[in-house]
Amino acid sequence: MNAVSPATVRRARHQPPTLVPLPPPDRSAPATEAPLRIAMLGPPWISIPAPGYGGVESVVSTLTEALVRRGHDVTLFCAPGSVSRGTVVTLLGESHPDEIERSLYEVDHVGQAFDRIDAAAGDARFDVIHDHCGFTGLAMAGRIDTPLVHTLHGPFTKETAAFYARHGHKATLVGISRTQLASAPPGLGPIASIPNPIELRAWPLEEHKDDYLLWIGRFTPEKGPQRAIAAARAVDVPLVLAGVVQPGQQAFFDREIAPHIDGTRVRFVGEVSGSTKRSLFARARGLLMPIRWDEPFGMVMVEALACGTPVIAFAEGAARELIVDGKTGFLVKDERGMTDAIGLLPRIAARDCRAWVSRHCDIEVVAAAYEHTYRSAAFPSIVRAVGAHV
Image (cartoon, rainbow, N blue to C red):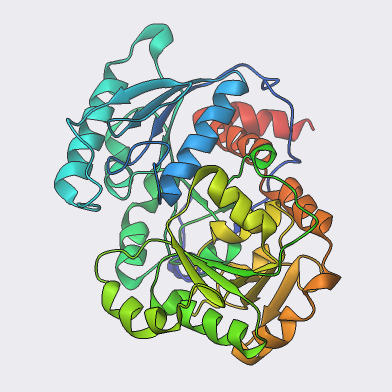
């Protein structure tokens, strides 16, 4: 074995992860290559798809259904109450929506899933595990024979960066945006960036808008509902606020949001889902995203664009990747910039917004990218050999 110099090791440790270029998307369904046996490891907290708020659960559900349509054999390990066209395996006696990130339930869920995966034999053996379940699966990936693909759903913090620096080499990592991966710890190696998917055909394109603006999300200061209110009131345009007030957010809501709700200029409709949510997005004049943190993705922006609704966002986090300034919305610095951009919304064509989503985030594009990632993880020598002859 060739010796590696200490200088080379030091350089590797201080280099940011490189982004893996993905092949052109194959929108065909079913898949053109041999089908895969995929163990989809969802979180144990909320049923899939989530009955209300549940970002990761929505991603897992959308991806699972698409992979089954494309001919793959998918077993979904998930919380009780889940529904899928794949094979559903629930491992805990009940879901735990109020105990998210309790290690007891995550470890129990992942441990049982790994036992089932290890026990599979012959034609029932899995080719790959796709892990969406926090940290346990990745930490233990070196103790299971089946290759594991781990999607990074959250931002890197001091604590999580240290975790990934220690355990990231045990699996194939996938990020959800370049912004997210820019803060990854050095030395992780190449990481693909695959956006969260949307089932585009399920979202209506509406070119004739109502007059209201929309804000939707969790009621926290960094999400900026108070800034959305200020921007909309400055130009006297109605604003609809949608979302659930979660534990710990009531004081902020009562202080900064409730005094402005009058049922006319500022309306609060609570948590929305299904056709009500899709209609709310589709009819809105624009979506306001006055965030003040490095959000790693931002699914509500993609949902708005899918309906042909432009987005005005602060240039923070992944908004800089999801919004094409002047084409699908506007990137602004502050509330004043947001107020000015509201008057420019008629310049944005609804079909341009939807076309961007179709090219980048439609489920068939995302599923094809994950298929390539699965095969690279499960059959690396074959994928390299094929790539060498392309």
